[in-house]
Image (cartoon, rainbow, N blue to C red):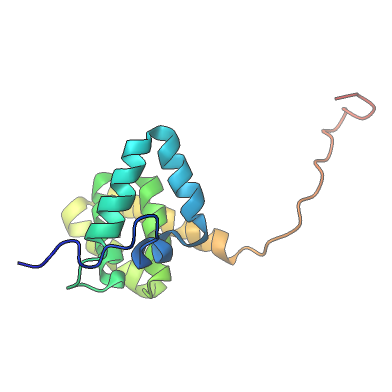
Length: 148
């Protein structure tokens, strides 16, 4: 039996899996989870990412494609979006992600697969949209001259 702690990061460090999956969103994701409950955040960070995801045997891309399929099955759109982003960051192509979502159809049905593709489409649209500087909000028609 293998030592389950052999590849865990140093305390306070960030695992390769967590860095890849969360990317620039890591701080925001961990803060959101901590706001829900600090122990919940620690369990997710330390067990799910720093222990389970760091196990050998499957590459990170495969783990993320599996996570996407599992999250489609659970109907968890927010988490699915994170792991769709993670799958792409871990080296999955858009086609591989699409194939994983299509594989959901015979097991989970069309509604779950459609929901998965909806999350993928939103993620790809956001990723491909050029970033523009924020403009100041325009006043509504008829609101000119009113003070805020």
